[in-house]
Image (cartoon, rainbow, N blue to C red; front, side):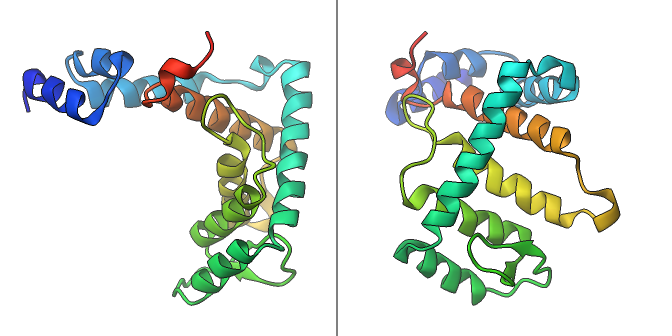
Length: 183
């Protein structure tokens, strides 16, 4: 499609200026993807200040606590029952609040995310995202995929968690709600 067609589509779909600016660049998909890739590749543990590390630990603990509480809700139970009926050959990832219950990493991330979001007590990033409830269940499911003798360290988990939160924030800047984000 030409930029003119994309611009017309953007009016219909409600894309805002930062998204249009990316579309105006020579190869927008490559530009956005490569910028995220460069960011992820360059982040080092030294970039996480003591304050960021402390807050991240609190966010992780809070998210797990909210997820455990959420594992008692009806919506969680419905999601779990649905996912247990789906075939997945790799049931290796734990489910919040269900000792011994395992699902595939993808389904466990989904169900655990539902648990965190179901109580609506999870953290928020103004205006419209709850980052830990999306990022942490996915990371924990990925950690379950590693062999027992090579699990990521706590610092590795916090690095990945912070990168996930940052990427989510950057993606949010492209949303229709971006004009509500305080500067």
